[in-house]
Image (cartoon, rainbow, N blue to C red; front, side, top):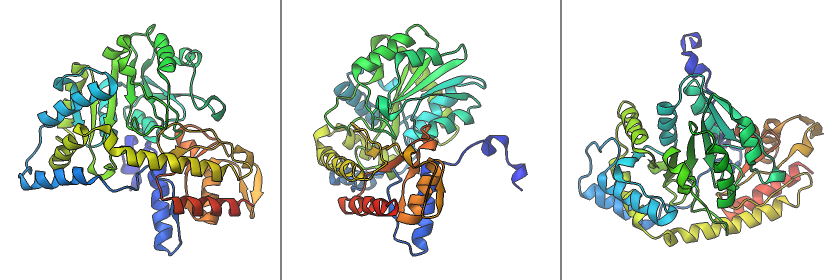
Length: 395
């Protein structure tokens, strides 16, 4: 009966990260000892003070529909967070709270993109950016980078990619999948190009902002000439280990925020009421409250780089944020290992899953066909065991 499905859903790719996670779960159910390094999900528990706030919200009988764009107290807390952490001035009317940052991004794309518009995606990029663009019947245009450029694009590349159809560009720093962080100087150089093209809007995805290792993060909207054209996206999933709580939010020009509220009102309405109350407590807490997680991620990053560096054929850079490494494994292409011919990153990732029992994600899904993404949001023991298995499988 698939012929009766809409063209829209048939054109939509399956999320590669979720597909690999599902494959890993299937193999686990078959009794295989699979180590999952595919999902971008902190392995920490949500901090106790946030859980206490959720329990209090239950006791206080927060059980009714919430406002479509979020509780006023939460929007106030988000405004204070933007000022404290990003030097951004937003008012509550510019804030929309959604069911995760993914919905925030989808809302923005739906209210700004028309069929035929072009969206620039500096590659590598998060897998859902391209899929969300497809759903809007727009076209995505990749701007390539490589491990040799620390997965960053140049102003010259940006200028060359812009056409009369360009409507948006998606920035993500710290980046998923590469962990790359654009400096303020680098963002300002890119902004100088965009200043010449006033009809292009910028989506700045800053969900990993607090997970950085010695490199300052910078908000694109903090560039004065970009503020009125930038939508800042954030959430609590990564920094506060709240992936399942599903709370994301935006700061945007008021007319865009109102359009997103209108869209959301017909799709999901307001986000979960208990999670919103807990998020108020999370955002009002000092950033230092999550330093223990960032410190552990930093230690794991150094460990996994050391271990991967011992495997011949892995080309590495040093990610400055998030919790992923994105090695170039193209040296294995064209080789036959244990009777399996490896021609691309997808085949390499499947080989690792089948012969090392380690789940990773192909870089092809992120617009970088020479790489694989490995998450180190896992215990040190699992990281050591997983990389040892990969090393043995490739021996």
